[in-house]
Image (cartoon, rainbow, N blue to C red; front, side, top):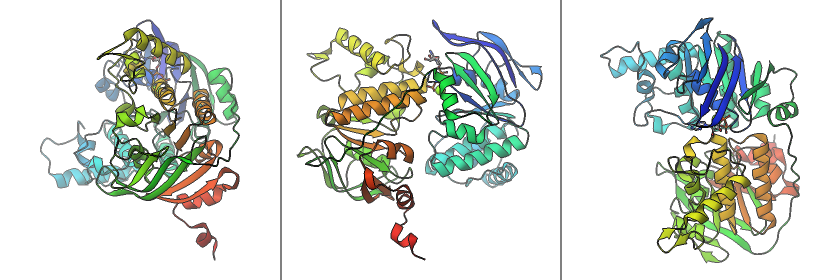
Length: 502
Ligand SMILES: Nc1ncnc2c1ncn2[C@@H]1O[C@H](COP(=O)(O)OP(=O)(O)OP(=O)(O)O)[C@@H](O)[C@H]1O
Ligand SMILES: [Mg+2]
């Protein structure tokens, strides 16, 4: 696959400036760059979702018109987006067959399932074909997306930040699949901000910077530092000093239980204390109750039992708004569903959680001038790249949306900040900036609860670490005696004492 001189502007913003990009058959090719560098835009053009203003794209030496996704698929290019586009109430087999040109007009469920099984065997990727999409884990849904694209005959598979939502073992499985597809002669293009995994899985890599290709090179021999420098020009250092905080609890959970979306118990009698001025890191493999923990604190999910207090006030049954008014910020895991309104302008998203406070309201209406000046300040502070604060939030790149939400919530949270995967989707420097902001909040006396499935990040940032497994807190450690191996065992549900015994 070869792209020559691809240029694309949105309004006045040039997202891609005469980019040349080529990926060979049989290779895994990583696409890197800062938030807003143009990675998704380039892939969307290859997948026929956006049309380039100028430039040529050839597949297997033949020039192709890519005016829409159907033409891209015809040319053998298929893309798996970061936000899946599966039909939730339908089964895996039905989703894979939707729009598959070879799907017979009249087909029984039995035949559909058999075909799906055969296809899965052929590719070496398996998911229960009879399961409904909503019943699957994120990693399994991603497999269905990949199968769906491959079933349409894609020979060039594009994955936009596929590992952002995966657990470490799921990511390892995905890498095996990517390698085996490349071994079978396909081209796999993938976007990632995680430089270590890029070096692990890709044959070659291309760095985009401000819409321009910086370099294409073999991955072997490259280092993470070098890549970070190519992407951003400079590297931001972060110094973290761990603190031992004593004193009263700021955020306090006693015997809190909650159910997940399927009505199954997800949190069981959780006791957890976060003091003012400390970062309590929650370590755990995703899906062990961390999401529910964050949601129950912020009232996005009811507690079945137990109580949550903030500086002595029982906030268990407070509304979402009342909790934000008490000075609790929430960087949600699902920034698109919970954190932002994509169709609304950046300025309105900037005040999404505090538009009702005195600062912005004038009687029943909003003080427009204040909202705009606040939004401008926030955009500058968070270094959100946007044409203007009047642009729709949906036009921001994924990482720029995350920057906006993370900083906004850090401003809302004076007393407590619940940060779920705060650096997910951020480039190296933006991640450091958000971490620095969280540390600053801590130093100003905010109680921070930070969830991440990146154990390195948890170890780096936390003053204390709580390990969660199957909805329970397995242990709480001071940063000073947090032992990586022990925490790893607890994350897998093993009691270290037992695991160590012969
Ligand atoms: N639909 C759109 N309308 C207006 N501007 C857009 C649109 N899509 C992308 N852009 C702009 O194009 C630029 C490149 O965005 P793109 O999404 O390609 O970045 P990215 O490299 O994928 O970043 P990230 O790592 O944050 O996902 C950004 O400035 C973005 O705001
Ligand atoms: Mg992107």
